[in-house]
Image 1 (cartoon, one colour):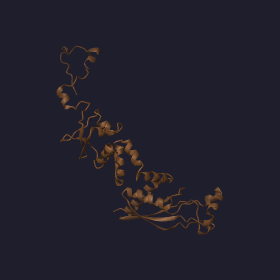
Image 2 (cartoon, rainbow, N blue to C red):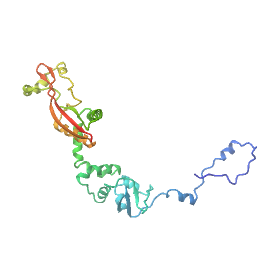
Image 3 (tube, helix red, strand yellow):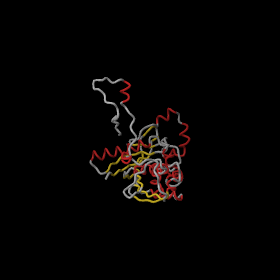
Image 4 (cartoon, helix red, strand yellow):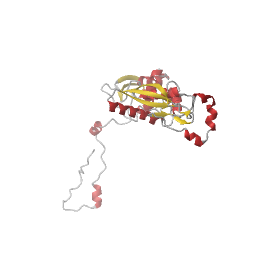
Length: 289
């Protein structure tokens, strides 16, 4: 801050009252910084960049042309190296970007020649492309595996009511049981069923007709909750129970949770007359260490 001392102003008698206009004159606009003060501040904009730009991205060194960084003008990199913003440099004069550089080479390869990363790096490079706001790269990656398949998977999971909530419930129940029992793993029962109506072996051929002939009051007779910890379903899609099980295990694994599962039977709850539930029950075993 530059402090104006008011030098050159006539001395004032301590006993002399100060008028309101004179009081306002005491508040002056800051003076223009001197050369010494400017030297202590950040370099004045715009910042000039060389044609060949040395980079330090999270400790990893890269070298590229300035035109490569500015390839797409709506990206963060183009804005950073437009000259409108100050980019700090390290001890060797490399322009520093405070970001993990593990996938920055893939970003540069796309900006240079449109090359896409190998499949095993697509997800990670996609996150970096989001950070740097590289729209063309995001569009390309969304149309290749595994991101293309993830779009289809999420469309299927969109049919599952409370899917994410049920995942959280599985984790919380397993954690609570393991802590209560001081055990390395915890087991819980999960019901995964595609069809809402119950079936028994001898009514399978007539299932579809029976399903639509039941009145609303009759349908309520079949409503119940299986004696399990978490229940997924029903849904209307080609994907079956095993597809949903794969999604559940995959999403838990992505959160670092080790889970095994096996079918341990069906819900044999008697509903009415000769109708039984028959929904499949799975045992989930979650290992914590």
